[in-house]
Structures are given as C-alpha cells and as structure tokens.
Image (cartoon, rainbow, N blue to C red; front, side, top):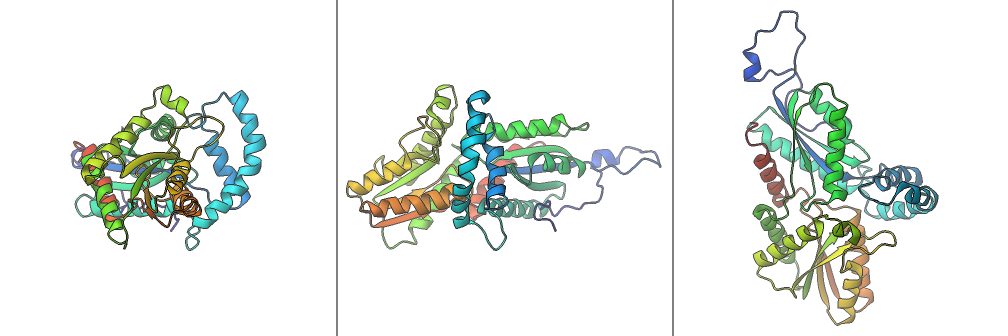
Length: 362
C-alpha cells in the first residue's frame, strides 16, 4: 500500500446514499459513487528526504508561498533563489536528520498526521461507514489537490477541510484553505465544503493541553520553576496588518493558566522560529530561555500548544536547542512536554472538533 493511501475503513465500492437509492436510474447508467462525507486533516508538510534536493524542493515550495513571505516577488525571489536555496537546504537537512523517522524514512510530522487520520477513521468506522478520513500536507506530499480529487472520486459529496492549527494565522490556516479552494477550481463536479475555524479557546482543547502537561510533569522527580508556552512566531508586521494569531496565542495561554491554576510567573508565553531580518512577535523563546538561566532559574519546562504534532520546530528547536541553551547558561533541569500528537487527549480534541463541524451532514 502506498504510504499516502486513504486511511478510511469505508468500502471502496460504489455506495448510494438512502436519498439517492430512491432514484430510479436507467439500466445502462454507470455506477455512481455518492453519499459520502470526507474528512481531510491537513498539516504543514515535510520534505521527502533530508538530502539537498528533497530539502530544496520542499523549502522552495514553502518559502515561495506569498502567505508565508509577504515581500514583493521582485525583492524576495532573487534572495530566495540565490542565497536561501543555496545554503538553507544543507543546514535544514542536517536538522531534519536529527529528528527523522528513519524506520519509515519520513518526518515525524507525517508519521503523527497519518496516525491521527487512522485513529479518527477507526473511530468513525464503528458508527458510520459513509465517512472517509484522509490526510494531506500543505507543502510536499500527499498534496491537498490530490487528496481532494481522491475524496471526490470516492463519492464524497461533502468535505470538511481541517487545517491542524488551533490558532488562526494567514501563514497557516489561510494558506491551507487557499489550496483547498484552488483544488475546487479544477473540479467539474465539486463537493460541498466546510473549513474548520480556529479552536484556540475551545474548552476541550484547553483541557487536553492541561492534562498533557499534568501527565508529563507527573513523570518527573522534580517540578519546574517556570513553564514556557512557545508558539511559532510571525513577523510583527503581519500582526500590525490584522493577523489575529498573536491574540489567539495569548488567549490560549490565559485560559490554560486559569485551568491549571497557575499565575503569570509560572506560565509564560514566547515565540520561536523567526526567519529573516524583520522583527517578529516577542518575547523570543531562545532569548527568554537564556535569560531565565542567567537569572538563576534551575528547572524549566517548555511545550508547544500551537503545534498539533511534534516536528522539527518542537523536537530539534525546543527539545534540542532550547535545552542546550538553558544548560549552557546555568540551568540544571530541562524538559520538553510533547505535543498532543495522536495521544488520547489529542484525538479527543480532533474528534470533538470534527463532530462539531459536520453537524447536519450525518
């Protein structure tokens, strides 16, 4: 089986929904696949390998997205195709190699997203065989366009596109939706479509984060003095132009702080993964980790509530680099709290959001 094959347990033979079954079709009418509902989980993406050319292809697609880099093409493209794509694939490839799933020869983001789709498909197979669950990546493979086409051809008359980003940003949620809509443009027979809105303040999501933190800290023989909620950053200029991401991140952190019963000194917010010369959302994670270590904090925990699945930015940048920064500047105990991934808590959130958004369809 292709590693990007659909994960639904629903039958692949033509299925006629009850309302269509009542229609008298001519004897010579070709089989019609219909009556299905498609659920498409969509994450950022991953390169197909860690060597130079797979990394270059992935980075070029990612960094060519005008939602990600909003500079005018006349300025950005010479920089991208000249400097960035000459040097960054090698550096990024080495970083990816440190967290690569060598057993399956794929990035962990792909491993976790597939597992989430498989578990969700299994859940729905027990109650409704008319639901087909699949997954796609915004950058790389499996592509959004190919999976939208497969779902339509499998008889999905309705599709729920689920960008796996709790906090909305034009750089993430919007660019996923762009690709979904672009896929529809190429279809003669379009399915009905819904897209999942941000769920940064959903009580089920907040509770799942809290439980994951409590469970992880319960495995330690020490208690962190400070816990950092580290979110992927965006340029400050994007926020000034109206992107709500900064507000969503702060609301998630505030609600989580209230759920855990912690104060502002115990649970703080930072932003990571800045790129280029612009000012990004602050405070920066790496600088904050260093500052706490220099100020005498000895025990620190970091988690990433904006990432549904562990990936390069969480495993290499936080669990690896941030931990090293903390210890190099005087810290003694550091832990990275894993993302929700396909844990029971994580799947509870995904299933909850999906069931909420497909009301009236099943």
